[in-house]
Length: 107
Image 1 (cartoon, one colour):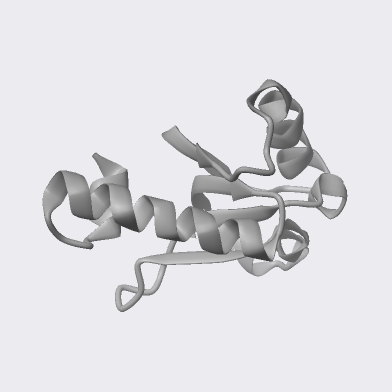
Image 2 (cartoon, rainbow, N blue to C red; image 1 turned 90 degrees about the vertical axis):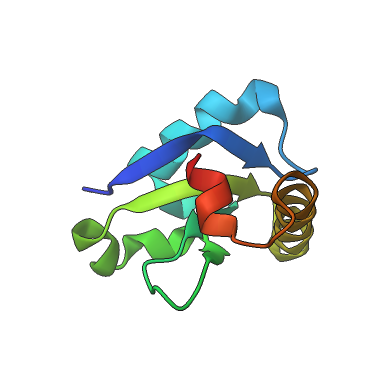
């Protein structure tokens, strides 16, 4: 399977993700997303949106072969992904004084 993923050097991890298992999770996301059993937070391709998150199994769709993802976070499940978005937003607001998440995460 040809999946194009770029992992941010400042990758956020949800509370349900153990840092010591990160390499194994990344390998599954690249080679076998069906077995990854995690949610991905990525920069949105749509200029109107900032972030998108979804179950990693969706990467099996042909769309992701044409449009690589810039992964900025990995979460255990939907609720963990929501909390991760909240944490990223809080950090951005504290550091920049705004909520321009794309700009904050690309830096």
